[in-house]
Image 1 (cartoon, each protein chain N blue to C red):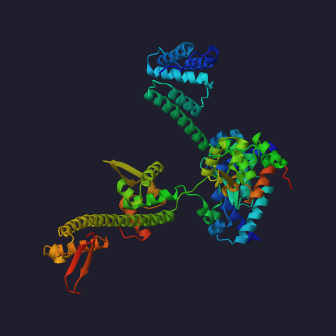
Image 2 (cartoon, each protein chain N blue to C red; image 1 turned 180 degrees about the horizontal axis):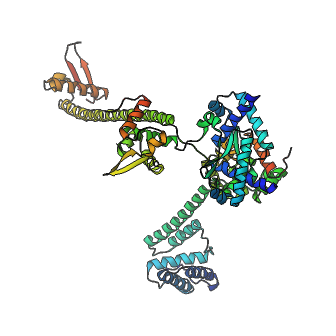
Image 3 (cartoon, one colour; image 1 turned 135 degrees about the horizontal axis):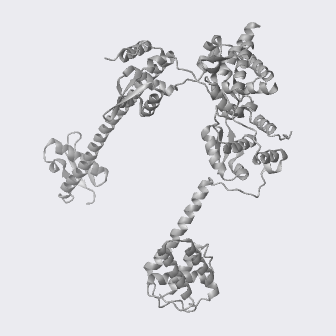
Length: 173
Length: 173
Length: 291
């Protein structure tokens, strides 16, 4: 029994430290526990966190399991959680969204040489598309961009207008 | 009473979401709770997590507060949370933490010439501060040191005591 | 160069160390050329036991002198005191009659180059240690005080009181609000950059203007010197007599200004005296001071 408790604690530690939904296989790889033990532990944790007076919960999300803040508490603390996209990239991303299609060299004039690194990273995340054009690149946002930010248009022109409107900026001609 | 319970849950959610040590002020800014309520909630959470059967703990780290995996469970989930500081630096860091303020040249006597490289790296990571003093340097740990290792004080003397206790060495009164 | 009068025969036992030294180096190297050269050195050292004045190559003879010095003065072939060696070498060279100064100079230079390399290496190693010197005379307090000693020993033996703590690694999506905020910040950054670049451009243009001004001033200064020379020669033409200013001007306005400026300069230099007979409209006279 004691061993069982200890196993569920290991699974608890795994869910907490990962900070994202994990499959049973991922938990197995990380902890070395058997699938059965993990499945039992997860069930136990779901019940335990439900019954316990806590702001946290363990729940199933599709085929994965996650430890997260209960819905009612999330709005209080969302600003504390680290952003998936760091601020330094976000600025470059916003400018690309507004000026698109924009030449990388023009963006460099606006923000400096760090742009090259940022574009590379934004491209990796899948939010910016870079198309070679002579010695520079033409930058646009990807389909993922409006999806990510919940902007209800995939049209580049409209994305640009939308950003301008939100930021209270006159549209460039 | 119910309100009080709820407040400590908000603080719990804040610590969980941030994933890093937070000051009372940071929690205040995010949650809108008063400093007193936050301080009380933190005390309550520390006790509660200590007493509860869980792999997690809430504890003081330097002058901040953090939610983290209890020491005993860390080794089980290390693949989900890879280490950032190489082991070879830990020895040097543990000696600086205990002997601080310590002359680099004295540290060199304890550990040999590799100390110079270690100090340089620890300085870059932001865990050790080096102040020039004639031909040597005076080394101290930074604020980040107790935060990073979850040492419950930012006071250098107390850090020494904490380390001695952990290493199983009696401190002279 | 001739061998020193008193002793050019070196006992075998003394040269053994140098021979061993050379043979050791030979065993370390693989290149044939190097081995050939070391063989040659070995032959040289062996021949030190005989008369080596017959060696024809000046350079080889100088090398012989080097070996001879090392052996004579029992210098450690593994650790030559180059300062001492250079002094001995120069002393020996002075005694000799047919010194090839070029070769001798080369050898001393080589010695000093090696010495410099050694000191650079020392400097480098001292830099690596950040110039710190360990004095073992003073026993550090961590060695004396029990608790500090216990802790230090425990850590050195592998005890580790600190470990990296595991915290939540998760992150979250960026909100729309944060994207708009970032856009506003980006706008400000762009404006700031534009402003800075405009300022830099203005400074550049100002800089260019200043450069032109400087050139203008420089040209003017050069003209001024020329003007003074012309006016001075005109004054000299009068052999020291007092001259009315009108006599050393050609009548046009520019020349008058040039002349009066030069006269004032020469007066300030105490080369001429300047006076006016009737103030303010009377004739101005100039006269060389050295007459």
